[in-house]
Length: 85
Length: 243
Figure (tube, each protein chain N blue to C red):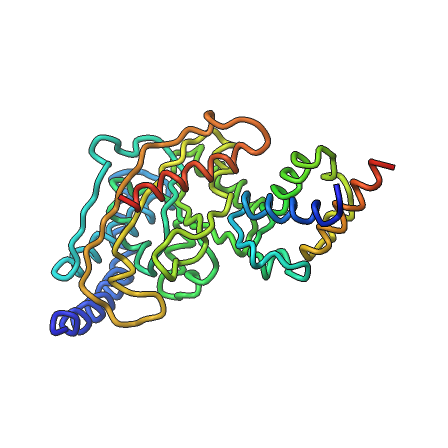
C-alpha cells in the first residue's frame, strides 16, 4: 500500500464515519476548528482507524497531540511502516 | 404580510409579558407545586418551564398551526434520551408540545447567556455541554436518567441553515450505549419558517413534530455501537423528512 493510498483510505473512512465533506480533507485542516470534530469524535476516530488498519494506537501518547489531518496521515503512515519493518 | 406584522407587534410584547409574569409569580408557583407534589426542586422547575412553554404556544397559536404525531401510540413513559433536529431558536419552546415535562436539555453555552432564563435553566439542572465537557455531561446525564428524567439533545449542535439535517455528533448515542436507556428520535419541521436563522422577524408557520419509534442501544454491538446507532437514527429521520 502506497502513502497516497493510505491517505485516500483515511480521508474516505473519516468522511464516511463523521459525515465530513471530502473537499475539506486537506492536510492543513485542523481537526476541531476546520473539520468540526469534537473530543468524542477524536476517540471514535482512533477506534475507526484501529479497525481499518488493524493496529492499536489508543494508548500512544503522540495521538493525543495531533491537531491537523496531515498529522493523522503522517502518524498512520509511520505506524504502518513500523509494523511492516 | 399584514398577518406577519400583526404577529410581530403582538407576539414579542406578549412574550415579554409572559416572562415578566413568570418571573414574578415563579416563587409562589414553585411553592404550590412543592406542597402538592413533594417533588425535588429541579423537577418542579422543569414542570414550570414546560408550563411556560405551553403558555408561549397559546401566545403564538393565532399565527402558528401545530401538529403532533406519534405520541398517542407511543407516549414517552420511561426516561429516555430524546434527540431532535435543530432549525430555529424556537425549537426549544416547541418542546412543550412533548407530553412530558421532566426533560433536561443538554445544550451549548449561549442560551445560558439569556440572563432572564439562566436561573431557571440552572435550577432545572440543564446541562451546558460546551462548558463542562462530555465526561461530566455523561456523569450528570447518567444520574438524571437514573432518577427518572429524560435528556434532550440536538445532535447537530447548531441550527441548520438550509433546513437539511447536518452532521450528527455522537454524544447522545454514546450515552445511550453506556447507560442502556433508549433513544427517542423526534423530527421537527416548520420552525425555520417561523423564525429563519439570522432573522428577527416572525412569520406565520405550520409546525410539525413527529415522534419516531424508540431505538434500543442493545441493537448495536461492539466498540462502534454508538456510531452505528447514530447513523441508523439519522437515516430514520432523513426518511421521515423525505416523505
